[in-house]
Length: 457
Ligand SMILES: Cc1cc2nc3c(=O)[nH]c(=O)nc-3n(C[C@H](O)[C@H](O)[C@H](O)COP(=O)(O)OP(=O)(O)OC[C@H]3O[C@@H](n4cnc5c(N)ncnc54)[C@H](O)[C@@H]3O)c2cc1C
Image (cartoon, rainbow, N blue to C red; front, side, top):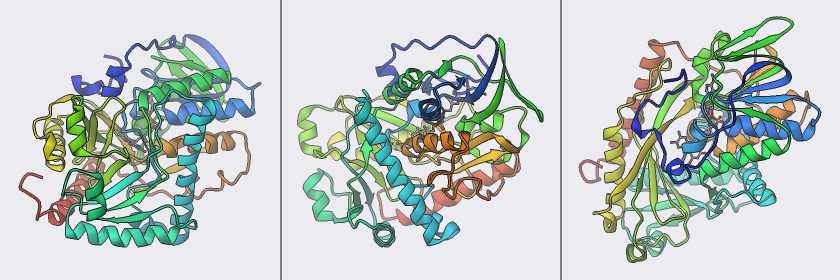
């Protein structure tokens, strides 16, 4: 097992990857190099930075070093929601940062959703992209009450008056063959994509701009001194003028930059996918508009249709890895809870089987707010804290970080998450206890709000 084979069990292969498995990774890095910019991590963040930076600066040398293969991390295994949610919840952002910053964050996220949508259109990306909107649903009176308050808050942040619509149960009953959806907020400007296809397309675009991407090339150490930054891989040494650490939930494992350890902690979210659902069952389920769905829980469930006639559902309870180990998560109970939840949502699926179960890490900051910043000095840039809402965020962050690398002062580089004051995570075992306490509190909140649901939901 390589230093980064961190998923550690057979649940590692996502449905997306299993369905699109004929992938040839690039050669590992070997030898010595001296480059302008090195990026560690080839997910949406790393690949977007590479493309944007090289587009503006074609003469510069830029390399991306990926420990496994493109899309091994969250970018190849997520739900594929191109969505505008920032951080954990708008209530949390407003509580921590106030209305003005929450509005700026929501505007950034709206821009991020359009950025991804436009990128797909402009480059004809084969990402199975669909722009059908997203529903945030409530099942119980307590959740409806919070949803109403959230709807008002979101509408207050929206200059267009178009971004959010509140739907009652009868309107949802027209669309879905289920009675459990009691109310929803519909956000039309939102989409879904196939994550593994998309990340491979981002690789292609970055290479088209001239970025050099090496796979199976874990960076084992970073050595920074006043006049140089040196990266070590198994078979090589890279000297770079600037470095971006785009490893998401793996940040606490980067050796040589101690300050990064306290920035975030990894949290594991799980997903399952049904067998192909027969047409006659789809006719009963409805869901013809194909909007993606999240529920209004603290431990949110996210579900969507796939192109090939299945449903994926993810979320619910999370698993907490030790930030030094990351693998071998026991998620059997989480998988079966997801399967039960879906069968409960759609009684016509009561006998449906599930073909794939997998999980992956998201990066969580203590104040549930994404962060981009310089570490130590302006030669090293770091991004973290997607909190499970990073498909759009990380790609626009790529443009933002390219601006930082180019020393450009732009509207994006002025976004307040850049070099924000972050609350440090205590290191393990206190950090581990902290994240488990947060998880227990959020689970309890959901249990209280859902006590009227059937037992086991
Ligand atoms: C199951 C799941 C479902 C999700 N669903 C959604 C969703 O529907 N919508 C949404 O908005 N967000 C979702 N997210 C979050 C979203 O996928 C992430 O925010 C986003 O993909 C993060 O991209 P990234 O490039 O920053 O990190 P990643 O994609 O995690 O990439 C980091 C890369 O760094 C590499 N790496 C780590 N250490 C090293 C090293 N030392 N040397 C070299 N390489 C290294 C890893 O191998 C990895 O490939 C989900 C996440 C998961 C796990």
